Length: 364
Length: 110
Image 1 (cartoon, each protein chain N blue to C red):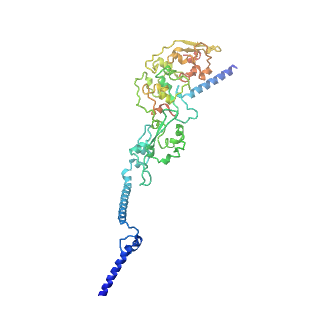
Image 2: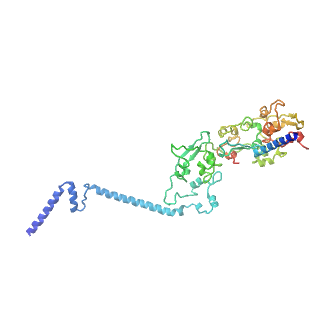
């Protein structure tokens, strides 16, 4: 028994001594040996706080992963549900005629796609991938100045454009970017020819005709103007020339403005300023007799002319005051000189020969 | 010689008639033209003379507001919005004001 007891004691003492000796060794030796004997002793690191932190970090990472998966799962579930929940009625339409009935219109009566998007009438998806996020809208207005004019500067709003388009749709191919890129001058000529803004506008975006104020904002209409004065003559109600001409007396196929004035069918104001008074008519007929052919005598009635015009409209720029000072010929008149300054344009046609040449008037 | 002269002057008169009847649309309307190289821009304005003459006598505008000669008036939108030419009346007081909402009233595609 004693020998067994001594052997056991010897072994225990030896083991204790060995461990004690080893523990007293350098850190490297201890780290190398001790993990063989004891569980939970991690070699390589002597700091006991690290394992705890690492475990906590792992747990936090797991939580984050789970959270992310939950968000993704919810989003996926929503994406599956979305077509049923938010598909706008416009998407049910099969024909353009049906679609156009549902879409908002702009001032010119055309489809206003920006408003359609804003109002939710259309809800276009950003991608075929249901989980793809929509591009952020860039709320940046750019003023495009016109060096030649005070009023023609335009405002380009990125916001409604980036609600439909990606940056790369326009930059840099259509509109170069960057300091080194020299942007081409934007002109209505180029736009209307299908360049610059005209790549879309006039095709898939609003047309430039009649939509000026959507880009050019320098002089907006303050209010819809209404005439403050009652029409002075029925003809002032005419909305078109075809309506007006029906109310005008006819002389040899052309409107007789002189008769219209004499019969009060028109009552034109003498001046822009309502205080301006009408100038008196001059009752003076002037006979112009060609020396080569006295038959073509002309009678010029000042009265008919001064009903519409003042002396300085014609004298002395068009007709000198001295009789016979102007070499008037029909060729020159047809070329737009002398009487031709008005006749054939705003006064009766030059084919109404008899109105000036009594000999050509024919039987009355 | 005389028939030849008569024929010539008749031809000139006919040419004149054709020119005067094709140059205008409605009686007396003035269809402005773009400067060479600027064609295809916003349509140039058309001034309806008839609409104005049934309201105002010739001398209400000529020559104090607009010279009575084609090309003699440097009409620009800046000048108009500054109260010159059409802007004497088209200011929202005497007549509707010129704005970017009213462009197509004058600038009509022909």
